Length: 226
Image 1 (cartoon, rainbow, N blue to C red):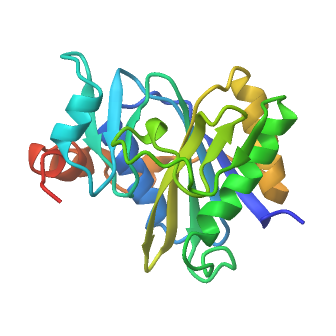
Image 2: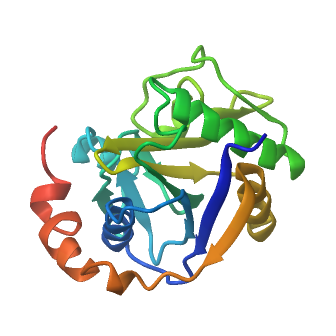
Image 3: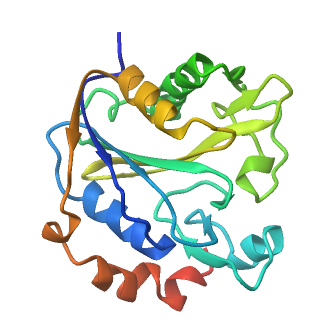
């Protein structure tokens, strides 16, 4: 049985900056969907994101470079280099059976499906039990419990989550995917019994540029000390 009975899928073809992606995800999370939404997207430049509770100085130390741009996520998790990954977001409405899972249940459930899709692509992988944790700030250098690792213990996928009165915002990152289109199709199909493709006009949900200016692109947000 799939994780979701029905799933809306939006392949966001607009390349956006890190702050714009975070703004889009906030608007999606707070929209109030009737069923879960999966968004696939890509970055417009050389970007690094850091979890809500991370320090900017740690992100800069993990991935230094004058050309890099850093953005603080609304979700938890570590520091992610988006120059070498593929990314997705899942918005799960309040009251959904997956949203009602406690602890790391929803995280594990999504990653179990993601691992299934990767296996179908021929990528040997499994969920880790947490014994490989290193406490590195770089997300892919620290395989925490329920992350996905390859046969050699190298981390392939991680995510950050935020729970609110709207439900769950799950932001995921995957490395080692060569067939991106194939992976997207397999992941969506594995997540739900019925998949509905959507073309979302995000500008009708809110002002992305305003959120960028007031939060995700502002120094006060990016540099805040947790």
